[in-house]
Length: 106
Image 1 (cartoon, rainbow, N blue to C red):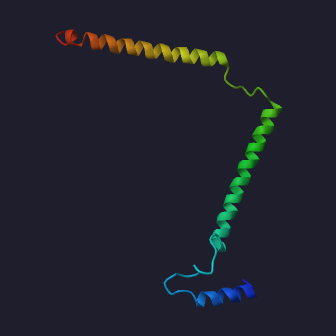
Image 2 (cartoon, rainbow, N blue to C red):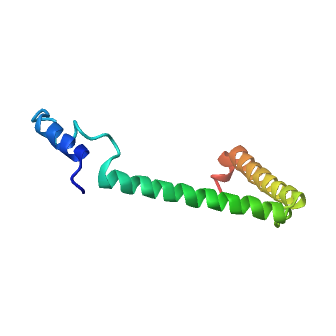
């Protein structure tokens, strides 16, 4: 780091801080220094990748409106199949509960 007036001021502030405050805490703002700079750079990179991916998805959706989304018929068939399976399982459970005492003697 170049020797500047700001560095001189920081050095003077460090020398006058409370001995139990730890290094650099009184003269440094949060998020400054090499670690803070790297964290900001990573965050900015992540935001840039996210926004780029989102823009690409929007452009793709505008270019091809039918991207092979699941059809309404397929959803109806799946809902009917799951409902039928739940009804069958419920019926079996009711029959077993009703005849549980009679089945135990077999």
